[in-house]
Length: 115
Picture 1 (tube, helix red, strand yellow):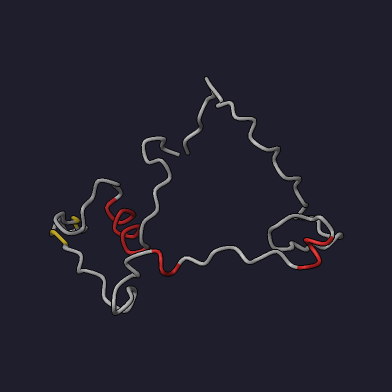
Picture 2: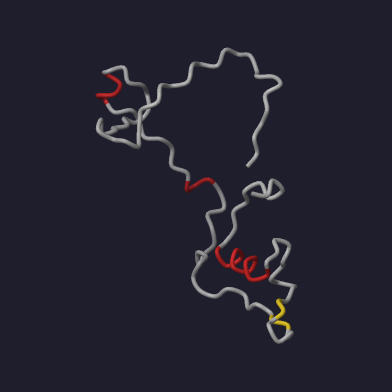
C-alpha cells in the first residue's frame, strides 16, 4: 500500500469516485471525469437515506460502557470484565493472558508502525 494514505476510511460513493477517476486527489464536488469521447462528465451527489434523517448523535450519549462482571467470573477470580467464552475446539480463537500491569516507566526509542 501507499504509506502516504495511512489507511484512511471513506464512504463507498467516494471510493467509487476515486476508482473511476483513477486518482486519490480527485474531488467529485469540483473535478470532472473525461469520457471515452473526450466529453467532461460530472458526478451527481449521492442520493438516498445513507445518513440519519436527524443527523448523528452530537455527543457521547451513544457510548455504552462495558458490562459489569458476572457473579461467576468474579467468584472464580477470572477478572472484573465480562465473561468471554471460547469453544475449546475453536481453531480460530484463543484466550489471551492479560498484559502485566504498567510498571510506571515509559517506553523510549520504540519504533512505531503506521499502516
